[in-house]
Image (cartoon, rainbow, N blue to C red; front, side):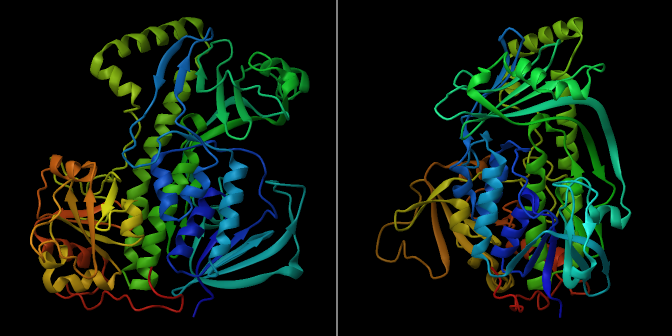
Length: 573
């Protein structure tokens, strides 16, 4: 018997999210982090509605969201302040705002503090992984205390007297771009490293001052003399990033005099404190493979996204969401470990698309030729005058959609026209039978959900409903607004074990109808809320589940090998 179900290396946002998700799903988890304390400075600054939906599954979204700067416009502006493009997204199809800026020390502290709610999650700080080895039954991880010159330094000294060895069924390397786990496996990263340098300056307002009132929005300042990024953050914080020229000297630009001169163009320097200044370059790379047997990579260990669309941290959060329920399926429900291969096949394409979009935006913003800058500005203005194209740009239609590539995900094959399989559905607020309104995901829970469109899905499934019960699935019926059964006694009787939900804004039911689905359809949502399948043939859904999730060797005509017997870690969540 292994000491832990999962060992996670790294306690950044990816590791924190994964620890919450695994802990909430009832798995025993050990988290190892080489640094004794959180970094204490902001790196990531932005999260979107998709990532907040993951944090909702993790049970922490409301707590972390209260500290965020919400619904800011995102703009591309000229050096004299003219707005070239403004992106605003007032609609909230996933319930959460699309644009949310945060201060990373607040986020990490709250995520770290709330892990205490899980007695099955153990966090060990100041512990560095020195070696690891896997066998057929698990992974042996040796870790030790280390001392060194500070956060992120590579000259730490291992204290051999503190070595300990543990066993885990699976190991996840979420230990950043310099991942010890990835390098230990000999996995290379492919892509491009950019020599282009940027100076990042993090500011905090002095007590009683209000230096950022005139900087309410996130601005990409498309100034050919010095492309600049201006980012609002909560709690009296603000970030600037300045694109350096090839002949600029790093030491000169990190000096007090240069920093004061640059930020003085935007703020009163006497009203702010400089918390950090750093010249950096960036990478746009992705690991050649994300799984080696019982060892998996996540976050920056698997892919590094340039900062120009704020998706680096969010990519790791999506990794954690995708991976956590599959590890639970294997460890608690006896699923075929081969489903872990779909983690990379589902996530790689989306992560790569985000990297490519970020590089494109960097190229758009950081033009340092006046002639090219004029051409860019003319092209943007012209594009915005075309009604359909302009609307697409303003709603950020170029952002990769939460949609798995056809044929490379766990679920029914997506139909060529209007197929919803492998996509993320909207999240409405639904009305329960007792009149209370709740978010859909909160009503459905964190496991599988089998939803009947104005029908009891258990009746459509018949005896095969038992298969889904063994996976811990919740059953629900979703009604259009005003379509709940009514009339004589018994017509609207609530059935035991069935969630009775009314889509009062018709957000989800209209989405289903636009996809060609009518009352009587059964929709299965995976634990990460992506659509596993939607069909009027409920047996087809069960066959797909058995075929793709059951242990290898299971006869597709029987379901007896899909097991939800509790393990030593507790009941399936």
